[in-house]
Length: 442
Image 1 (cartoon, rainbow, N blue to C red):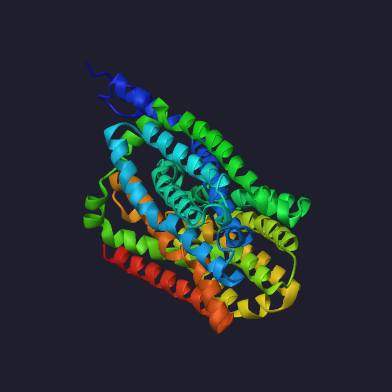
Image 2 (cartoon, rainbow, N blue to C red; image 1 turned 90 degrees about the horizontal axis):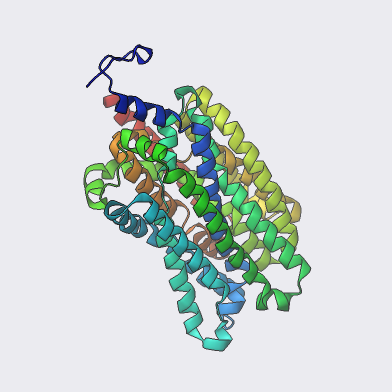
C-alpha cells in the first residue's frame, strides 16, 4: 500500500523506495573516491614493479646473450602483452559477474593479479632453465593483463554519477592519484634495494622482494574494495543507476564509435605516461649518463610534481570543463615534446628536468584522462563502456610506448620520441574535436 512522504516531495512513494533512496544517499562520493584510490594503487604498483624490472633486471636475467639494448627491447615487448590481454580479461570477467556476482569477479581477478605478480618473484634465470624462464614470464604477464581487465569494479563510473556537477573534475582527479602513489611505492622500494645491495645480490634475489610485496598490497586492496563493493548500499546504487555488465559483443556493436573516440581522447596522456616513468630509466642505463639511484630519486620527486599537477587539474576542470582542460593539456604536451631532445640529451640536469616537468605535465593531463567522454554512453552502458574504453586507451597509448620510444630513439635519435609524442597529441585533439561536433549535432 502506497503512502505519501512529504519530506521527499514525491507523492505515492513506497517505504521500500524510500529505503533505497536513503541507502543510495549513504554512498558518499568521498567514500567511493577512497575505494578507487586504494584499488587502483595496487594495480599501478604491480605494473610499475614490472616496468622497472624490464630495465634493471630482466635483460640480464632472461636475455644474457643479447646486447643491453636488445635485452630491454625484448623485455618491453613482454611488457606490452598485459595491455593486449586486458580487453579479453574484461570480456571474460564481465561474463563471470553476470553468472555469479561482482564480489566474486573482483575476488578472482585480484587473487589472479596478485598470484601472477608473486609468481614472477620465483622466476628462475635463463642460465638455469633456458627459454622456459622467458615463457614463464610471458605467461605471468598475460595473466596480469587478464586479471587487470577483470578488476574493473565500476567505482569510477559510480563516482562520476554521484558527484555534484560543479565538482566532477575534482572527484575525477582523486581517482587518478593512484598512479603517482603506486609509482612512489614501487620506485622507493627499488631505490632502497638497488642502493643497499651490490649488483650481484640485487640481480640474484633483491629484485624479487617488490613482487612479494605486490601480493600483500593486492590482499589489502581486495578487502578494502570488497568492503565497499559488496555492501547493500553500493549494490542498490549500481542498480538504481542501471550500471550493468553488458556483453562485449553487444557493446562493440552498438557503442564502437564512442569507445573509439574515448580511447583516443586521452591518447596524449597515456603516451606520456610511460615516456616519463619507464623510458628515462632505460635511456640513462644504456647511455650511462647518470646512476640508476639518481634517476630513481628524480622520478620520485617527479611523482610529487605529478600529484600537484593532478590537484591543479581538478580545480581547472571544474572551472573551464574537463574536455577543455584535456585539450589544453594535450597542447602543452605538444610543446613539451618539442623540447624533449634537448632535455634528454642535455646530461644529468636536462634529464632530471625532463622527468620532473614530464611528471608535472602528466599530472595536469592524466588527472582528467579517465572517463573524459564516457558521458556519451547511455547510463546503463557506462559500467562496461568505461571499462573497455580504458582498456583500449592503455593498449593504443601506453602499451608500446617504452618499446617504440627506445627503438626509435636508438635508430633515429631523440627527435623520433618527439614525433611519437606529437602523434598522440594530434590524435587527442582530433578525437576531442570529433566528440564536440557529434555532441553539437545531438
